[in-house]
Length: 186
Image 1: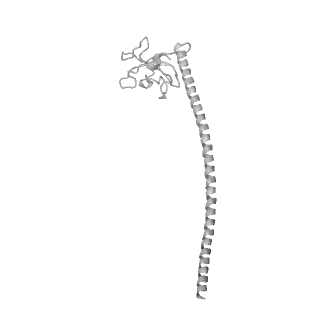
Image 2: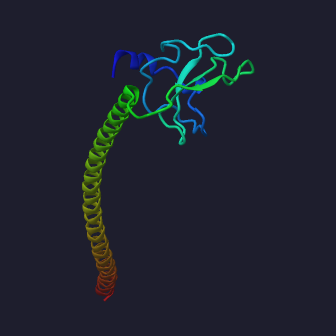
Image 3: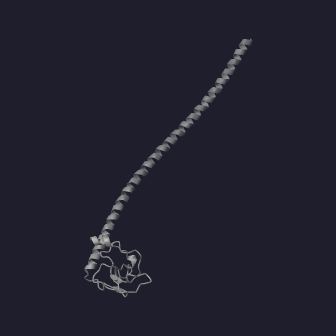
């Protein structure tokens, strides 16, 4: 686009345009304006006797058609001036350029979508890898839990044996003490 498009992209159709004889959807221009609303020639004056603004209609009924409207449109001071600039689409350099701009905008959006799809695919691959790693870690934790459960069972069994050995030692100690006292008494 030309250098004027970056300057004119700041012109908002919500200022006084965008509708152009059809139900305005409120989305504004799909492409930046190449010419500001007051930068056209030859000038046309509205009923207020000031230069009318030139806008582009993006309504469903009249898409891409230029029109002129009072600078004070959408205010109480609006004189009601409205005139179509483009009465015939057929061989207009403006429409050719507009279609080229829209084609470029579509291509740019397709590039953005392709880049986002590639990032999404990479993120999906990374997510699958992380899911596999998590699954592997969960299996490892599960195996360690089973091992710990087996060790706890073995510890309980050993604790029972130790308990039995302690009682046997106590019994043998009592029996030994009883035998020693019996020998001393006899």
